[in-house]
Amino acid sequence: MKKIKILLGIVAIAFAFGCEGPQGPPGRDGFDGADGEDAQRASVFEQAVTFAYDIDNNLWSSEVLSFGNTFNGDVFLAYVSLDENLFTSLPASFFDEFGEFQYVFDHDVDSVQFQIIGDNDLSDLGVDFTDNVVTRVAIIPGDLVAEFNVNGEMDIISLMKQMNISETDIIFQ
Image (cartoon, rainbow, N blue to C red):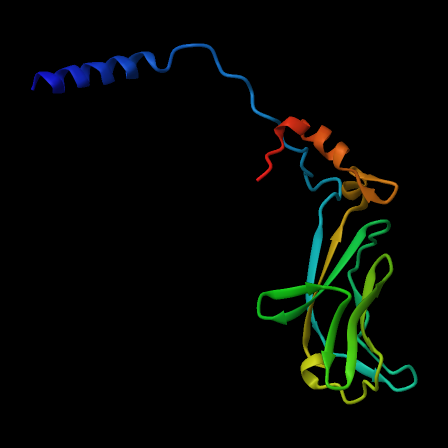
């Protein structure tokens, strides 16, 4: 009983005085987020497309998907679904018994078009590859990308400075 009273006394003293003292150092600030009012938000569009075969050029083209906004200078990333909740980025190559074919895309400031190109006769490509293919397009504002981009390459030093990280903070495993 005596040990329990001593233990409870120590816990009570630690609890009573545990909240005293100066405030600790502040943590690292995160990146300034986009508030949505300055159009600095990424957009993602998903749509199932059906391709139509162009016999003259031996390629399959989707309809042109228009987004209704102008995304001038922004980064377009395109994906095609391989399975439910499984996407791969474009261009993506596939192989069948006839050769190789690829899903590719073209875009301008407000629309995107998907195509299937290949090194063989694509006219017999199965409907699994041409009908109701789920696609996604992610549009990332160019200003957000350019913040860490020097001469077209990612600048890790600028990123580390922005996050207030030094080389000594890097943990190698």
